[in-house]
Length: 260
Image 1 (cartoon, helix red, strand yellow):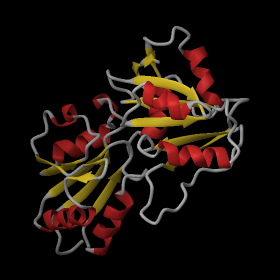
Image 2 (spheres, rainbow, N blue to C red):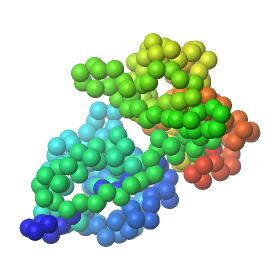
Image 3 (cartoon, rainbow, N blue to C red):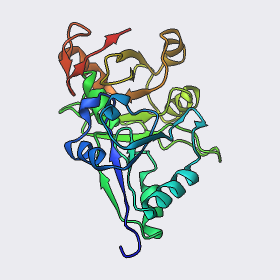
Image 4 (cartoon, rainbow, N blue to C red):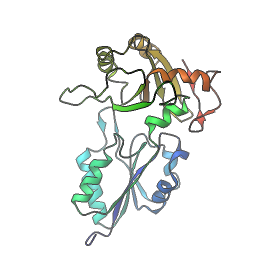
């Protein structure tokens, strides 16, 4: 676009392990002048990057930079002629505000590109031996943000269906809230729940429980963020894919993780 010599590239870093970034994403990093990266990005991805790297991430309500300031910085750097990579965990458009940042670039006349990433919503369960769909068990899945909105609106969890897997992101801190919704929406007490913490990394850990036990089980097992939460009968498939309960490569190539 005339008048803007720089550009913005929204890149998904993948679900955790540094080797799960895409080839195109890695190429974008190599060509960047500036990288603005998020909290869940493994810093080894940036080890050999020549660009200036700035942390702008958010964790549990603590923001290094507010979202509107991140958007303004993207525009300002691009208009100064820089190639800017906005590096986000997972996929930039899956609950990552990448769409908001792209919209600001479009409005301000800044050229931009979106480089998809491997979303943690699918890859992290897979790395723990849990397929989000499985023939005869689940033919659909939904990905839900479990981060509560300021207006107190209910989470977008669907009514219980045994053939639908629910994947919750950002749900550790809001466990009591979404548990109440599960019960109200008809999820049975024996419906399995898996917490996959630090998925696809060497620190991956798995806690398996049920709707009826999760309020006690999750805290006692040390469940913490970051974690992907899987709700549904597909959790039981792990017993077939990882019969020893851990070890060996699963899914994305990382460790299956210890189960507690």
